[in-house]
Image (cartoon, each protein chain N blue to C red):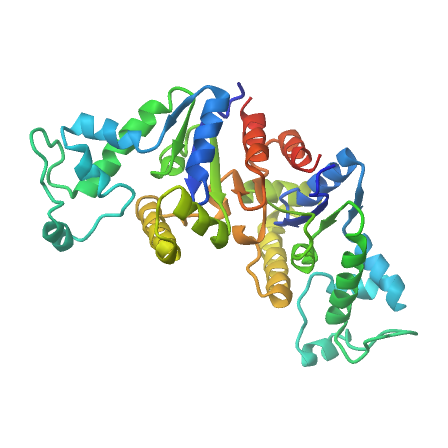
Length: 202
Length: 202
């Protein structure tokens, strides 16, 4: 395995980036982390994972909004950073966990991992995207989004991800400068993409 | 060879995109077109190639500027579209030639080829980029730009290319949506990039 054995995956909603990341991890026989990071973070914090799931990959809400939504200081038991909104607590815990995980070869999807690991010399930073037509199809098929709402859900989800990324990294989500390789899954066949990524890592 | 045998290369100045395009063409044993397109266009038009070189990949200047620069209607001999600024004449001729060339497998660097061939089903649209530090090194080494002027030359050249691209295509140069694969040559080794591209085409 080459030095580039920590693979981060930024992805547009419905682009199949998560599935591609999983397939690459399987092909290389390395670990894959996505929502599992939330469970790990929740476990460390003593929080109920469901509370974290609601704020995952969302930038901090205003204090007022956080209070009104009841997502401020609602931890039961041990809450190590309890003066902070849950979003920021989750970010900091994920930050810590991502750095720990990056000690071994792995694929990490989303969660600003490319930014958090920016000083890691072993990084391969991917961004996965597709055209709207295909993303709508995937949103319906993979994420069970109703077809008439798919485009709106896609745009809202991407906006939330972009805000999260730029809030914590001060960089622009989906802008080529932040990545080593950007792959359009509408035009690059899935198997070719897996092969390409593996060829860099192996 | 797969269906994707027409390869277009958009590239930041100093990213090594042209050299990568040439290496891919050599590896695949297919034709490579870059500035040669100018010679072909000039040949068709009856113009001196040098006149075209000055306006290559530059968007149309205003009429006044064109007149003041002496780049308006200065063709000798046959000038088929002589009411147009030379920039537009060159674009139209390159447009025609690019469509003709795309009948056979080839690599075409710059000149809005990805946009001109947008309806071609055999297209692989690449965008090649790199960080500023490496681009400065390449500008000095490959393009003989003085080191103290390199960053300014890079920024100006990219601005000119971006304007040209957006003027004729109404799209944003360097934005992922317009490409199938975007490769950062600062972090993806050259040989790995060539191998990746060939793996899609072969």
